[in-house]
Amino acid sequence: MRIEKVKIGNKEVMPLTIPSGIVMTDPRCAKRLLEKCKEIGVWTTKSIGENERIVPEGYEVINPDPNKEYGFRESILAQIDDGSLVNAVRLTNPGKDKMREYLLKTNIPSDRIINASVFGGSIREVVSVIKTLEGVVDTIEINGSCPHSEKGGMLIGLEPKTVYNFVTAAVQVTKKPVLFKITPNTTNENIGLIARAVKEAGGAGVVAINTVGPYIHYVDGHAVLTSKIGGGISGSRIKERGVECIRVVRKAVPDEDFLIFAMGGIRTARDVEDYMAARANVCGIGSALAGMNENELANYFPTIVSDLENGTNYAEKLLKKVDMNYKRVTIDDIIDDNCDFKVIKTTNNINAKPGQFVFAWLPGVGEKPFSIMDNSPLTLGILERGEFTKKFSSLKEGDYFYVRGPYGIAPSVNNGEEVALVGGGCGIAGLYLFAKQLSKKAKVTTLLAAKDKEHIPYIKKFENCGEVYIATEDGSLGRKGLVTDLLKEVKLRKQSYFLNCGPKAMVEAVLPLELKISVPERVYSSVDYMTRCGTGICGSCADEKGRRTCVEGPFMNL
Image (cartoon, rainbow, N blue to C red; front, side, top):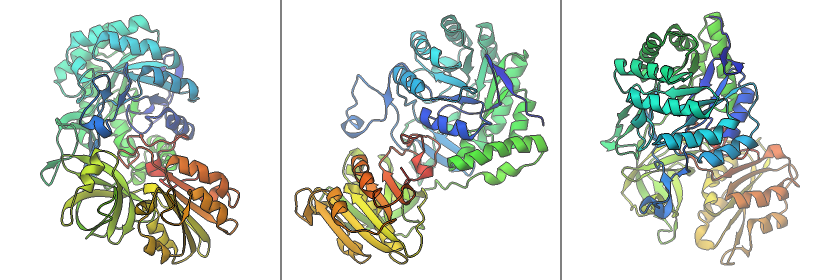
């Protein structure tokens, strides 16, 4: 199959994209991946609304601010089977003004299409977003398909007349091509009417399909997603429905200039061929990218193109096996039970490497990621900070919770080297497994700091793995001071490895001192970015450089 570029507006681009809300949700991440993946011709932003929509944390979980808009808390994603996911995010986004700023600051490759996905509960809201963004994007995609939004999304996308009115209003305020994203959660007849309404209103095309749903996924009788109505299914389970919808759209609007961005269960070149046979113009790949880091993505997309051109199917072998299944674990012991930092030991082992993490899930409460403090047995360090950790910390011996993972990759250290483990606060929990494993082949020196002695766990265990130096802010243990004070005093070998785990401020403070001793390639740091899925799909954990820390790290060269 010959791959030809498609003309969209005034650009000709490769006919591949990643759908809205998948992987490249942060513009900095989009820039990195678009530079690595020349085959991706269209970048679709996550859906942008008039106002910022945040994830509720702390007191806002129970007492939401009426002046703020909220998305869903974790769990936002669950695995139905090896090729299918269900998600409910509720359109969290930075709002139109911040998004415009981000786009102006980020040099997205100029030879690609920036497709702005926008949403709103009224024509006024959608028009407001379009007016703000249209000067910095190439096309507009109106989200008329999200199955779990309380405004916009599917609520405006089921009635052809309403679709016509939204598209008409949009084309009146922008010269950029306007697309409308349609839902599969209606009849084929209605999908055809919606497609014609988009065409008659002056729209340039449609995007199809969004997820199929709502669907509620259960584990041991417990609904996984925070959303009370469930979420939308993506991945291989919906491919047949996706292809069917594209056929319906193209039959309703046979005009070849009417663009169809198709998606739903595309994993291999054969899937792309099926959608192209239904006369789609652009194909989007989303759920299939779960677990892939940026180098793997940079290999996958050219392989898809090569498979299409040569009739091969090598891309299928590049798909990752991501385990999102939950395992029930039982609490065996709780250390420092009277402190707000607790060490929770379970009766269960986990096959995990140093530096990896798991998600702990409490049915009806939610889930959060935690560093694996030890793997035999599975041990987690919990600092009470918000509603989830308060509930988690209230568990007792004999209680159970669920985990999924492990996720992340571990930095490699050569045999016989010297390694300095530098931890602050709850970041200490991410270092003990390093000490335990690396002490078998390397000289380990551990530098730990916290506000007081109650917040420095596992001291004896760390000491069994090598020299340990401690600082506390109140002087209750070790020297009074910070971990930077320890780094200035402790003599470490030149070219030592450094593994840092702690708050961003701590990491930024220790890096200059460490780089006087070692080289950047041997300094790894883990910073507490928001991590919501662990598989790279949601993109929420992107750091300042645009790297998705859950699949590129969490320990990375900064």
